[in-house]
Image: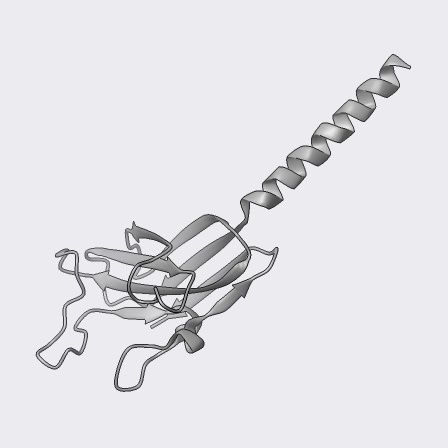
Length: 141
């Protein structure tokens, strides 16, 4: 009887730990390929609303570049609709440089490889859904 009780306790605790991990959310891995160089850093933001897109990220980070690419992972992301944007701060001035017309001089991109026409990419083109599964977004320049 004592052994049976121990087995039930272990099964209950194992089940509880597995459910607790699900409540923490999924992972979004971002792979950025074909950057112009290994100089500087890449600034990456994850957005969870259309109104915050390209403004204030839900989560943001910075990454080093190796072999003209970088990979970062956002952890504990709840189910929902998201979009990603990044820029390559090649000269390390912590901003995306642009010319006098406002056209970016440094590499940039968004999830789903969304590109804007005569302006920045749109939320509708960059958004994707997380639904109980971790994903990888590969952005190729």
